[in-house]
Image 1 (tube, rainbow, N blue to C red):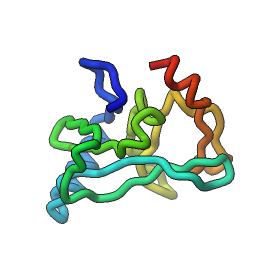
Image 2: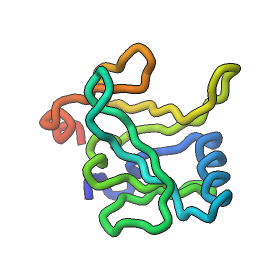
Image 3: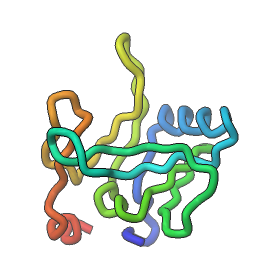
Length: 123
C-alpha cells in the first residue's frame, strides 16, 4: 500500500526476528501485527498484537522465520523502521528505531511523528 518496490517497509534485527519467531511458534500465531494509535504524552503509541490471519491490506515482512504485518493506517508512519529486541536487567522488549519520529516522551513509550506531508515527501 505505501512502499517502495524492492524495499521492505520495516527491518528486524536478528534478535527481534528470533523473538518474533519464538512468539509465533508458542501459540501457533501466523505473525505479529504492528501499528500506531493516538495516545501517550507525545501523541502516538506503537501497538503490537498476535495475528492468526493476515488482512489483505497488511504489508507483510518476513525474515528468518518471523512474520510482521503492518496495519494499513500505520504503513506510512513505520516505513524505514528497524525493530530490535533488547534485554536488560530491568526489562525486555521490542525497540523501534524509526526515522519518522521527531520527538518521544522520557520513557520512550510515546512518540510524535513528522507531519504527513513531510512523510510523503520522504518516501
